[in-house]
Image 1 (cartoon, protein in one colour):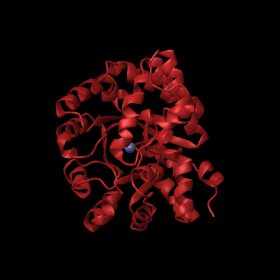
Image 2: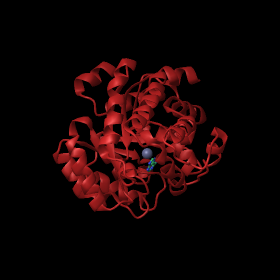
Image 3: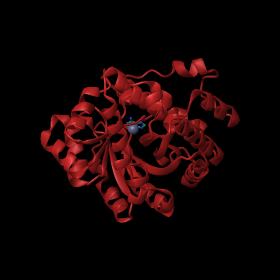
Image 4: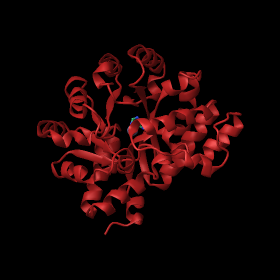
Length: 325
Ligand code: ADE
Ligand code: ZN
């Protein structure tokens, strides 16, 4: 029987975590006050009442407007350092943090403000024994031209970024729309991952594009791949990581997709467990491990394998990996 103590104590790598999705109601209100931004709510209860969503689009409609409270470098620092303290409490030893620069540059905040604040928090987190890196995501519902400009800016800060990702609204926004940016990012030595969220329209086609044409190293969510045995064989063979987020899945679909995770684990796919947007989906990484372990009766060996997979498919150096594995 898996306990909360076990999932919390297990050393983990967090590979699917949107920093903007760690904005807790309390910090949201504090920053709103500090920056004189009216978010329409003044108490934690009022903020929580706005957290109503049952699919990806309705979630994003709550998620993006809240980012208005993030204005200064200090705000981004505070957001990231608060998260990294939580990561330390969850025994997260390594974290690759997604951030969405276009969600900020599109409302007049400079790329520099965002990355300087986030990066300084990752430096200071070393004192907490958490090793942290940043993954810049393109918003797939923005234009190719906007992605091109964003990558150009990002490359100025190349040493502060470990890779690129692709997130936001997947509907009619296939990975291939950004093939050129992913190619350029690869040429600049950056790692690559793409969101293929659960149960989206054209799921399998999106997964195929990401794997076969864009040669990503991980798929975020990606568990719809179980529908296509050839693609399952491909990710198993190439050791592509699939970052599943059970509590997030429970919000955007009727279930957390534990059956799919176990099936993939059984077939030797490097699937792992993460938290997506913990302030919005009701739990950090240990809660996600516990939720799936409890509901699907996972054995200790299965839980440990999920955690091993998170380190194996992380973008830390092989020498450093040996420390964890
Ligand atoms: N941005 C934050 N969370 C996301 C998710 N689960 N899917 C797509 N974009 C996101
Ligand atoms: Zn995500």
